[in-house]
Image 1 (cartoon, rainbow, N blue to C red):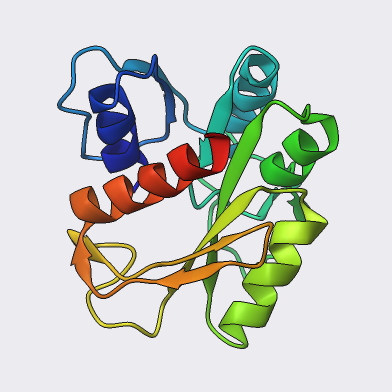
Image 2 (cartoon, rainbow, N blue to C red; image 1 turned 180 degrees about the vertical axis):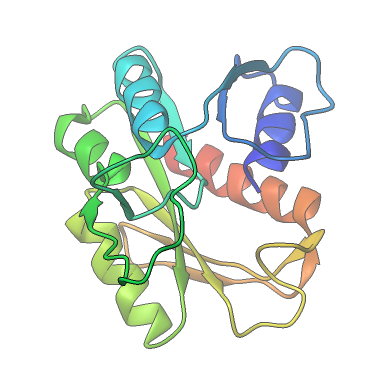
Length: 185
């Protein structure tokens, strides 16, 4: 969704910086500035450093919630003992930006939920000080990761809930941008 949103926003005339993790898709619009990152930590740093200068931030990445405490530069050899993997939380980018968001900025996030979907998304909208949240469900066939289609629900701070049928990610991106435009007009 992030690449489709970047393409659509550039098509709407926006100057777009796309902080992009390791994916096999690229924006088609050559005006999109791509900032390649590898880790959740690098994504957080890039987003935080750019946020103050932007009008609208759309956080569409499925960033890992946890990262290893210890990272090894070489293969860990198998031995007779068990391996204990310790994880620590990553920076919550949406929450961090939500704490510093000005009244003139629009902050949009995504919620990939598996249970109590609508209530969890609404709680996330307010907890992270978002203006809009896009709900995806892992239960919807053809939606979310690994598909060219998505089925979204857009929820805004005014408790408006717009549910959309399954459609191309390109069309879903335009629905999201149309909602953002309606909010800022």
